[in-house]
Length: 291
Image (cartoon, rainbow, N blue to C red; front, top):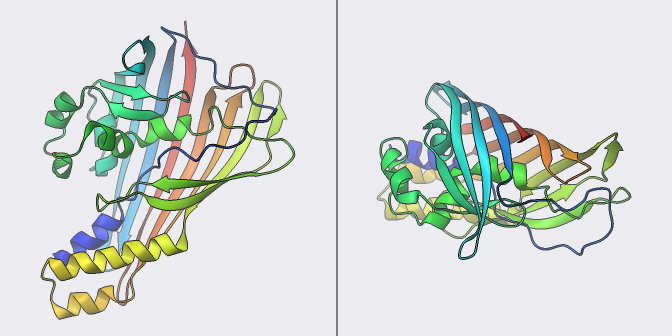
């Protein structure tokens, strides 16, 4: 049970925090234009397959459409409301997708790129998710935003990003720690942008830092030690390695800087002395302005 729980914990590596600031420069992508009362729709498609040695693959899929509205407030800054229009789920979603899969309204505070920083209705949403994500019961509204809104973070990622048509852009980044500790260091890269009509095409990759992956493996071994794992489980964790790679193709609106499409594959791999496991997620997100 401890062994399975530790491997499952590794598979919860979820979307990241904001990247370090980069020097601004003129480029093919304008900074995101926002206004109070701005309305748009967000369509999300996710399909996921998880594999572990000796266990049949687990798959699930999600299709959801939310209406989004931006409110600019004096005390809280940008507040985005996602109101569900349609949500269809097959299988048991991973915990980090439970908020969107629940079909509940979501109100979140956002930065200038509209990446979520805090879930404003966290108390109500936490009660809704008590069964599907019980381990989040003690999470703060800020931590919940980082873990439970990976789609909002992913679609906002290239917005306000100072990409270039001539050279790649590389930045340090972070992904959430499934053990609840400090975020895990990673490195992201935008390839030189290309322009096609009113679209700017961006190709992006992110991988966790190898040393950070080793640190996570050490943390899992320490958790096994403190949790009273038996000698066999400790031996199997001795060779544990954790890898993750994200790849996306973004289509950006060259007129206003909004991400119109994100087409992504997120691959997480887990290897120990006697087991292999991993997860492959395919994500497609579309944003469409509304009057």
